[in-house]
Length: 128
Image (cartoon, rainbow, N blue to C red; front, side, top):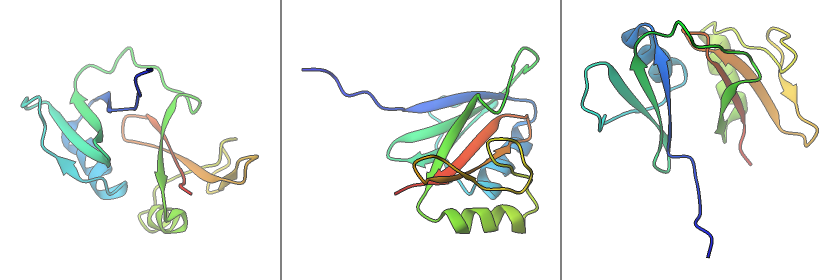
């Protein structure tokens, strides 16, 4: 029998923990959850079903990011999320980098790309 694997969490280094926590909590509307690490430089945000994003304040100097290197959050209310981004004046683009545009994949799924305060790329797409 093969073990089932699933994403548990991803950790990203951030320059300013408070600024990043506001982005993930207020802009992406992820709930802050209890931080099992119990360290003052780490905060956790839930993605549902036991999955989370861990923000770790530290030296991001060697971190290299491009739009191709991103993580994706799916939503059952894609139009509502795009409206939220526009309402909060958060810049986003399609996969080609065209500002304010929505990407449509070959399979018909819509998505947008945006960056957090440290430049990490996040894709938000439709969840069917």
